[in-house]
Structures are given as structure tokens and as C-alpha cells.
Amino acid sequence: MNNLFNDSSNTINNTILEKTEVVYGIENIVARAIERWKNTQKKMDSCIDRLQPKLLVTDKTMFSELVELVGKDIRTRTIFEITEENVFYVKELMELIKPFGKKHIIRHLDNVIGNFSISDEKIFQSHVMGDLSIPNHNNNKEPENQAKQKEFNINMMIASTLPQCILSNVHAFVEQQQNIFELMWQKAISAEQRIKEIEFGIEPEVIETIKDKEETQNLLFGLLESAKEEVLVIFSTSNEFHRQNGAGFFKVVKKVKEMRPWINIRILTSKDNEIDSLKDEEFSSFNIVFVEPLQRVSVLVVDRKYSLTIELKDDTKQHPSPDAIGLASYSNSLPTVLSYISVFETLLKQTELLEQLKDHDKIQQEFINIAAHELRNPIQPILGLSEILIRKKGGDQNEIELLETINKNAKRLQKLTEDILDLTRIESKFLVIHKETLNLNDFVLDIIKNYERSIGNKDKDIEFKYDNFNQSIIIEADKNRLNQVIANLISNSVKFIDKKIGGVISISINIRKIDRFETVVFDIQDNGIGIDKEILPKLFTKFASKSFQGTGLGLYLSKKIIEAHGGKIWAQNNEGGKGATFSFSIPLTKDVIIK
Image (cartoon, rainbow, N blue to C red; front, top):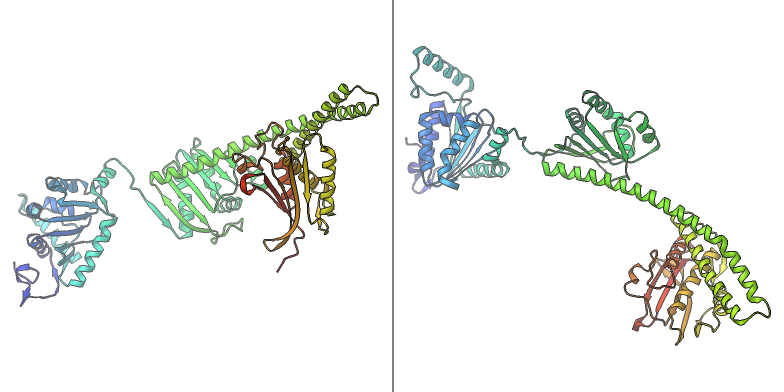
């Protein structure tokens, strides 16, 4: 058969003639297809709809030509739409190509319409013939009346469908169609996978993005109505809970629960007073757990097979609003669904652990509070009576030393008790700051002098240095709490100065510009042993201490007190490895900005 699309006759003077031709009639279309198979030299890419596999297998002429095509030294890639109706014939074709290894590959793609092929990337052929999977008159001997009836049916089909075929060797057109095939090939899945899905009833995996808001809501309700075993829901905000309630979410869920009472329905949502009351009244049959507000994505998982996630664009309204819903994502992919189940279970577990921790903390705080008060009551008389006995004239020196030891340890116990009570107040968020106006330099000097008198020369030879204390720095602060912080820092410095050698503690107060605000900075520097490298990163946390002389609460309490004043506290070892410097800052006023 010679024509323009026969490779042996399509050139004139080495110039390729480009032409597009339309062929009508089933017999001509089949003939052109077979011609293309015979003339293909290197490769053929084909896309075939759901009707043609049966024709390829049952028509003896086409099948024999197909066997010759497969046996040639060429490469073929074929896309079928494989369905329950044609899977038997596709398997026959796969058996045909099996001996040739990877030279011939078949894949599946949904919704293939029409048929086309590209030979050697030169000639494009496309046709739509309908269901021609009727054996021709050469295949079987049939009664004359049946043959006439089939001939009549074929003629009627030809008249109604007008089958036609387009052939083209126009380079730009062929190249465009080749690109289309490549895109389809990338989306297609292996024929083996599709056949397995059909034969074992496996639903094809889908991940789909949905933009239409009404479609999203309908899909949500459809998934709920299909539930047979379990429904998992995460409402990211309380407003989303109310919006879905208004849209009819819980009406659908109740209906499903009535039809299938065994269904396990678990809901995670953030809490408000209305939901709290609805939980025990209207929704008592559901397992509703309150969680902290999440990112703006709500999640539905049904029967551990399907997931639907919905973005929230506008969370300001409690009533149903199309503006509230953003993009949605539906999936029946097992890894995707399992990931959302994991998110649900993790949130639920975290919430349960948080409740347990809250109960534990409450019990712990109550115990600490009671213990601290019980310790506080006997300490005061011990201190008072021991001081009376110490001041008593004519007392024996050994007895006085014993009484001083009792008094000293009672004061340590008193300090520990007060620290524990402060810790309880802070953990319970009951720490109250009573600010008043004070001159910081005068205030600090009084604390230093009192400390100098209290330590005297009994324990250590310590020199206090304080410069530039002549100017007045007026701040608003809680005197008692600030006294507690400075005393803690001085005590901390004294504690780590070598008793035999002694040392120097330098204190300075300056006004600095921090984040463009006028801020007073207090520095206390010592030449002691410095801060242990292991403790330094967690210095201001609870019980951070390697010393047997303290609990590690002092610096933690100091940090909380300074932060309650709007300031910060920090520490570092001095250069050269000798001693450490502790510092804290307090804003002078929040309204003054340095320009």
C-alpha cells in the first residue's frame, strides 16, 4: 500500500513532504494502523482507550500483525485505560510481550478518550472507532442470518459514529503530540499495579486538591455518611467547631451513629464555655477531648482509609461562612492517612499527659505549700529564743557558740522556707510586685553595708568596691523583692570566694541604651572560682546547683522577680577565668525612648 505516509515514498528530491490526511471507514482505519506497524523501524508510542484491547486480541488479522510488530527489533510504549471489562484482554497482551523483556512496556491511565500512536517520532495517527471488538467474518463460521445481522449492525454503527482517522507527518504537530504522550506516560501507572487493584478490589490511591468550597463541604458530609467503624476529627479552633455545628456536621454524625451505633467517634477541639456545656448535654455520645488551639487546618479521618484536611482562611466567625474555608486535600493513600492518624493520636496522648502533669503539679504545689508553712511556724521561736539566750549576760562561751550554730542554721532553714514559698507563688502565678519610687544607689549601698556588718571578719576577708554612687538613679520597683535579688547575688559571690585568700566584690550601676530604651544595669563582679561550665547553660533554672550550701532556687527566683519588673538577668565568667559577673537590667520608664 503506497501513500504519502509510507516511508519509502514520502520524499521528493530529499525534501520531506508534510501533509495531514483524514481517512474514513473502519476498514481503511484498520488498514492504515497495520501499515504503520509494518513501517515502524525504531519505536512506537500508543495511547489506547478501554474499547480497543478486546479488538486487538479477538481480531485474528490485527492480532497476527501485532505479533509480528512485537517480534520486530523495536521499542514500544503503550498506555491503556484498563478496566474490569477489558482486563482479561490486557493480560493477554502482556503475555504476548512478556518474552521480550523491557522492549515493550504497558501502563494504565484513567479516562483515556480516543486512540493515537506516534511512529518513530515522525508520523502521528489518531482515530476514534467505537467498539469494534466484533470478530470479522473470517474468524468464525456462523449461520448466514447471524452474519447478515452483524453486517447490518456494523453498517449502522458506521453510519452513526462516522469513524475516522487522522494521519500527519507535519513536524510541529507530531512533536506536540509526542510531548502530550510524554506527559501522559509520566502520569500513568504500571499495568501490573492496575490489574492487581482490579483483581483484589484495591481502590486506586488518590491525593486530590479541592478548591470549590461547596464541593469540600459535600465531600466532608459524604465521607461521614460512608463511615462504618471510626471517625476521627480535629477542629483546629473552637470557632471551626461552631461553624461545622451550624453547617450540619453533628446532625450527619448523629444520623450515622443511630444507623451504626458501634462507630467510634473521637473529636479533638479547642475549648470554650459553650462547647464545654454542649459536650455533656448534646454530644455526650461522642468522645470529645479538649486540646490547645492548633494551626489553621482541620482534619477528618474515616475508617482509617480516607482523610480530608481543610485550611481555614477566616476564623473570625462562628457561623457558617464560605470565606472561612480555604483549600482542601482529600486522600485515600495509606501513608497519608496513617500520618494524620499519627497526628491525632499524638495530640490525644500529649493532652492526656498534660492533664496528668497539671494534676501532679497541683498536688506537688499543695504539698510544698503545706510543708513550707509547717516549717515556718517552729523556725521563728527557735530564732527568737536562741537570740535571747545569746544576748544573755554571763553565759558560758561554749554554750554561746552552740546557740550561734543553732541560730545560723535556723536562719538557713528560714531562707529555704521563704524560697520554697516564693517558688510556690511563682508556679501558681501569684507573685505580686508592689512598685514604689526609690533611689537605686542609696538602696544598694544600704544592702552592702548591712551585709558587711553581718559577715564581719568571721568567715572571709572580703572587700566591697562601689564606684559612681554619687548620682541619683530613680526607679520604680518592689523594695523587698529587689532587696531579695541583690542579696542573692551578693551571697552567691561571697559563697564562691576562697575563704583563705579572700577576695573583692565590685558593684556598679549604669544607665545604658538597650533596644532604644533607657535602662538601668546592675553589675556585680567577683574574683572567686567562677561558674561551673556544666551549670552555666542552666544557671537560672530551678535547682541548678553543684554546691551543698544551697538549693539552687535563689537565682531562679531572682530571674522571675527581675522579669516581673520588665527586666532581664544574665551571668558570665570573667575574662582570664577568674571569677564571674552577674548582671540585671530594669527599664527606667517604658515611655522614654532615646533618639
